[in-house]
Length: 384
Ligand SMILES: *Cc1c(COP(=O)(O)O)cnc(C)c1O
Image (tube, rainbow, N blue to C red; front, side):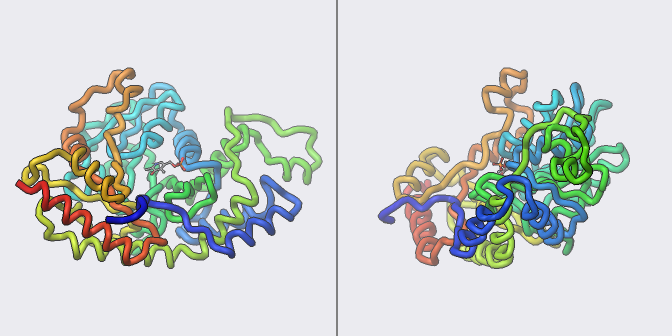
C-alpha cells in the first residue's frame, strides 16, 4: 500500500507563478490595479465571454451573480441538491429560497425534464451546476427558462475549460460563475470570476464587489470626484493585483492542465469500466468534460458493506477519496429552514453510493496505479 495519503486534488504552483506574484508585489498596486483588469480581459477571452468580473471567491461570485440576476426576498431559484452548499447559500444570502430539482441518475446533472414541476410564480432563476466538470443539458434548460423569462446562472466551479456543443462554458448563459480555489483547475489562492455577455449585468457585478459604489477609486480620482455615490448594498469582494498575477500565470497553463486531467480520467475509465462492484457516471455526447473531479458509484447490490466501509477501507490504503456531496438540504441548517429528506429521491440515492477518486495534474502514473490497485483490492474483498 502507499506510504502517504494521496489527496483528491491539490494546486500546482510553478516558478513562473512565483515570479509573476513577486513582480506584482513590487508594483504600485497591492489590491485593485492593472493586473486585475488584464486578468479579467484574458479570462473573458479564454471562455469566449464579453465580460469577466473577478471577485474574492467562487462563493462571492455566486452571491454577486444572484444579486445581478435580481434575486431578492421571497424569490425562488431552482438548483441541484448534488452540489457544494455555496450554490444554494447564495440564494439565501439575498433572502431568496433555493428550490431543489432532482438530478438525472446517469449524468448526475440537474434533470431539465423536472424543472417545470419546480417553477412557481416566484421563480427568478435556474442555477445548474456542471457536476464534476460535465456540462448540463443547457439547450433543454434554456428552453425551460426562455418561455418563463428566467435568468440562468451556471455554477461552473467544476467546469473551467468545459465545452457544450463546441462552445466554451462561460459564454452561453446570462451569468456563469467560476471558482479559483486551490482544488479547482487554476487558482489565485482564493478567488472567483463571473462572466457575462451583458454590459448592464457586468456593471452590476462590478458595483456589487465594491460596496455598491457607482465608480471605483481609480475612476473617482481620475475624474476628480469628491466622493462616489453608493447605489446598491454591495460588499468588499475585490480580488487583489498579486492574486490576479497568479491567475494570469496559471491561466496560461490551462490547456496543459485540462489535457492531463483528461488523460487521468481516460485511464480510470478504461481500467475501471468493468470492475465488479463499481459503476461510472455516464458522459454525454457533444461535450468536453473538464474533469474537476472523478466520481464513481459503489454498486451496493453487489457488495456486502455500505459506502462508508468502502470509504474507510480506501482511506486506510492511503487513497484520499472524498464525498461530493451530501444533498445540500441534508445539512442541519437547511433542515432548520424546513427542508425535509425525500425531496429529491434520485440525488439522495446517488449520495449514498458516490465517492470521488483523486484527480489533479501533478498526479503521477504511479499514483493512478495505486488508486486502481487499492480499488480492486477493496471491492474484491467486499464482493458478495
Ligand atoms: C468550489 C465550489 C464553489 C465555491 O467556490 P469557493 O471559491 O470555494 O468559494 C461553489 N460551487 C461549487 C460547485 C464548487 O465546487
